[in-house]
Image (cartoon, rainbow, N blue to C red; front, side, top):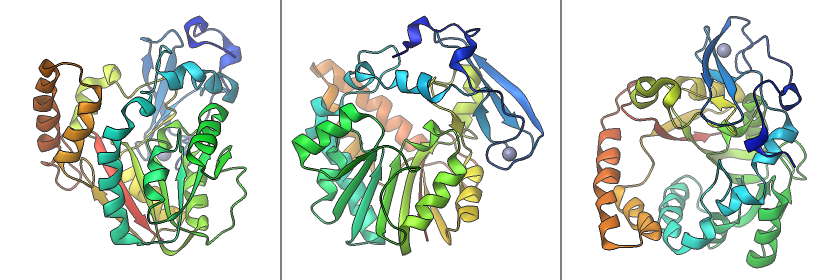
Length: 306
Ligand SMILES: [Zn+2]
């Protein structure tokens, strides 16, 4: 498995051929935006002059990306790492339950699919109301979710799953879309999988947010595993194009501040850590100043109804 600490930019085996068109709208009017050099695997992002979509170009190969999601990634010990949710699952459940409460306003029951289901913590909470299914590309975490959680998880992607159309009442993709090389077909596939009036829940960064624009190439969302960078408008348009009839946006998220504060305690070790509540609260409240296309921060969650 490749390791991103040994991957210089000039190692062409890491990259697919460059794209000549915007992967979202198909326009050939694209231009280099930033080169991100703070990781040992350097990459460039381009911006579409037609729709504003930002995307990695050339993108890493699937094999290189797989290397970023090794066991180390999930254990939180890789250079580019994911927080191990198992350590703080009790705390994460505050956020999961709050999210499920909002989802139930859209669909009270039925089949529920979480794409990027990781260790299955969120699905286990959803299982109190729904029949749950997961898609997860890491065999390491999928196997854990099957064994420890008794969950029905397909190891793979939206391109090779066994599910039929018009089957799900709810599909969630929480911080997944930015990892996809071709997000538009994925959104279409989600629409096909949903029943009429079913809901797709998406969380990804809004690159038109002031936070992202001010920080430019230093913005923390530019990561080797992130291939697609949306604006709110990009994502709303892509959802309508994929066949969804209505879209609602929540900024920063669809639930309140309290579950976030409770969740954050999962990583606190001393009383002094509680000072982080000031930062979390400030971020949440500033995010609330969003209006129309203006977003002070980059957090957004979209609910798209078929
Ligand atoms: Zn475009």
